[in-house]
Length: 146
Image 1 (cartoon, rainbow, N blue to C red):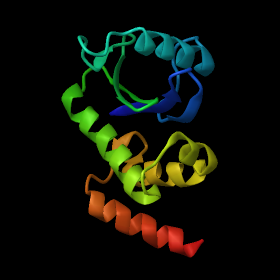
Image 2: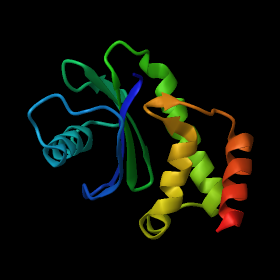
Image 3: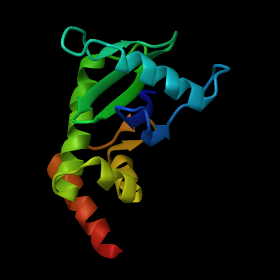
C-alpha cells in the first residue's frame, strides 16, 4: 500500500482533515500519533531540512506547508518519496480551483466537499487520478448533483 494516511492541520496543531487507509498496527492511539506528527513537523527548520523523513519502522512522512496549513502523507517506508509532494501539491491545486482560492475556513465549513476531492484522488491508499482537469470535471459534475 502506498499512502497510509493523509492529514491536514494548522500551525496550532488543530486537525482539519484526517483519512487513514491502513490499520494502525502499533499500540499508540491515532490522536497520540497525530500529536507526535505535529510536534515533529512543527519543530523542523523548513528552510534547511527536507520535507520527508522516517517516522516509524514502516512509515515515512511527506509534508508540505501552504500558508497556515500542513498537508502530510504517511507512506510505506519502501516507497519512493519524491513523487508524493507533487500529489500533495495537486490536491491543494484542485482544492484551490474547486473553491476559488481555498482557505482554512473552506476546509472547516465544507469538509464533506474536501473529502470528496480526496476520495476522487486517493482510494484505499492508492493514487487514482493525477489529471487536474479530469478531477475538476468529475467534481463539478458531482457538485451539480447536490
